[in-house]
Amino acid sequence: MNNQKTAFIYAIPAVVFWSTVATAFKIALSSINVFQLLFYSTFIAAISLFAIIIFQGKLHLFKKLTVKDYLRYLVTGFFNPFFYYLVLFKAYSILPAQIAQPLNFTWPIMLVLLSIIFLKQKISFKSVAAIFISFFGVVIISLQGNLSSLHIENAFGVFLAIGSSIIWAFYWIINVKDKNDEAIKLFMSFAFGFVFIFIANFSFSKIIIPDFPALSAAVYVGLFEMGITFFLWMKALQISKSNAKICNLVYLCPFVSLIFIHFIIGETIYYTTYIGLIFIVLGILLQNMFDKK
Picture 1 (spheres, helix red, strand yellow):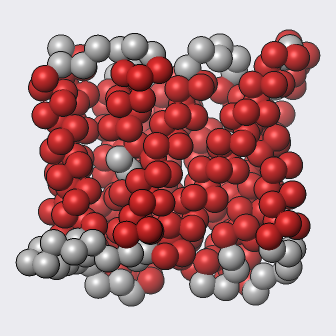
Picture 2 (cartoon, helix red, strand yellow):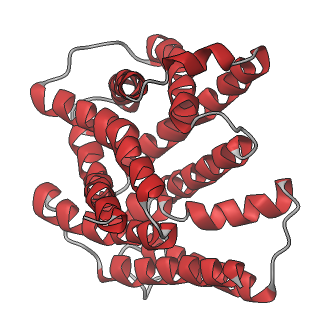
């Protein structure tokens, strides 16, 4: 079996797992609040990431971390997992999953915009046009099946879902100059992030033992949104001869996610969700194409 086929064997399960997590979010949030979901999922994610580090024989890399690195991970841990998932989970608690998921998927466009501000990157007129195409899709999705009224329902939830994509993009901007190992970086962020989550949970909520469906969903989120899936994806990128072919699989996630949302949660998918999602993905693909040129 050649390396490209092996890369797809790793990448396809990662895409499937990421396509299911919106459903897991909603199942968990039906019984526990955002702080409790964040507490359990982050704890599981940190354990799974540490297990991956042991499995890969990378424990010795911790010795290379400097005081500056620890301070950086204190900051990144605040943004991800703490702030990012707090905002994202709150959005899911307010919005239908079919709305929150594609709005959060606008993070590649937010990354472009933040790169202009913080990394002083230049942008072409074509790229600007691509960004507007994606944002047109955001508006359509936000109308939730009612194009005639042009009224955005659950505006606060829409604001949070889009805001989560900005936080995620900002997290990547902070990480761009960190040359440490990816697994180490992510584990350290989750370790420091869990401290913030622990404090927030005691300050604004309480630690409970959830019922089995909610606890299972929280563990699933920790493993397959935050933990193991990261390992599968990074392995696919390391093996692949063409990272572009692997990365393009990510654009299947929001569409496949709608299948799980419909058949497991039972949401009736708005026609505006399909239309808006097509515009969002089209804008992102065009932006990537213009960047390569």
